[in-house]
Amino acid sequence: MIADALDRDALLRALEGQSADAVIHELTALRKSPLRHSGMALTDRLRDAGTTNLLAAAEQLGARRFLTQSFILGYGYRDHGNQLLSEEAPFGVRQGDACDPHLDAMRSTEQHAFSAPEGIALRYGLLYGGDGEQMCTQLASRKVPVANGGTLGWIHHEDAAAATVAALEHGGGGQAYNLVDDRPATWAEVFTAMARAFGAPPPWKLPRWLFRLVAPYVATFAVDTAMRVSPAKAHAELNWRPVFPTYLDGIADMVSIGRQPAGS
Amino acid sequence: MKQSASARHDIDRAAVSVTEDLRSRATRHSVVSGRPIAMAAAILSAATMVVLGGWAFLQPMSFSDFSNCAPYNRHLVHDAGAFQIGIGVTLLLALVWSDAPLVALIGFVVASGLHTISHYADRHLGGHDSDVPVLSLHPHRADRHRFKHSQEDNMKVLLAGASGALGVPIARHLIQHGHDVLGLTRDPGAVTGFSNSALPR
Image 1: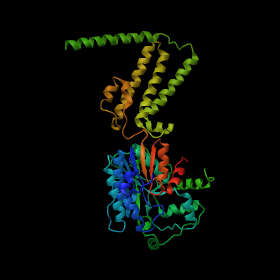
Image 2 (image 1 turned 90 degrees about the vertical axis):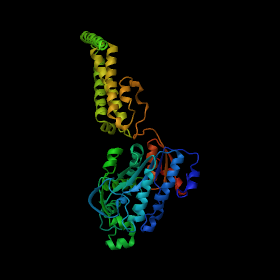
Image 3 (image 1 turned 90 degrees about the horizontal axis):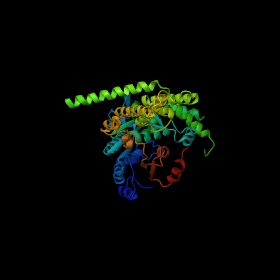
Image 4 (image 1 turned 60 degrees about the vertical axis):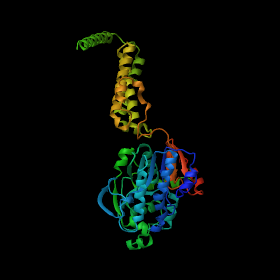
């Protein structure tokens, strides 16, 4: 079914006569990873206006459950020190810089989702692993730079998908869930390990100021954020555990899939 | 007062007669003895039922992981354990007593007693307030209801962003869990890619 979620009337018309029990909002415009803040504008709109329109669609479909994509960076693009972030920590609070529109959008999609009869917010960690071939090409041509930075929460695409279905089946209405694996890691650690596993040359290591200049949006988390995020609530309430507990396990799987003959 | 005193007397008399009955029957040889193969099979089956049932009843999550049946439903596993223990106890009693109705009745009491405990233990997961009193009387009115937060039933799901990097594996996991997926995407070019890669890998 093809429809633009930002065009409310067209969306509702496209869904006429349909019914559903649940709606899952995973709309983003991140096919090409944005380097600059402006590249997030459409994703931010999909999280704000897109959520409102999908809620109207859910009501028309008779769907009570509404799951929306959120992101651990909603806790703030900054150094959180040693604090272990649970779902109780303040979320989507403006910090007076170029990240504010993204924080507004994440807060908006969660608050709108919670207005559904059974609304759930999925605070994913940084996603990796679903784009092996593309990643391999980019690493081979050294297009993914690294710099010194803090630890972040990560999650393999497969684990994120399994956790989403677990939240659909077991999640409590009005709840947010941190969905990250068991081992926080820095941007540099993950992509250096990935390059090594693919047999690519090590990524260019840039000074922080140069990384910020080349990719100002990516630098806000890859360089300037440090956070430890707890998935304890998702473990307890969703009966979910990652199949790839660390980025090293996930990368090993990416490599083994890449080695399988095409079509399998 | 008078009435309840006489009722108590009746109950005492009934209890005495059941106890005497049990005593006299327990001394008799069971029909199974003298048939070693049937005896061994009954003991083996009973042990399996009691051990697996006890595991499911006491450690439902560990049992569910072992049997590898996703998604996990704590209450369903509890109930299955309760009835398995009931079957095991019935088998064991049959080795000792030849009175079929009595053996069956005690097995039933064990199974439905544990079933009632299971409903009491899982009352926070859903069910009805009337389950515990009703089940202790009429076990078969049991599990018609659905337990909240563990929706085993298949759901119809509108997945917005179904052609995205995360939408594609989510669609695959939804299908593997028996849900119906209605995919929504803005990008018509992505639709063919979606239907191919949504197949189980």
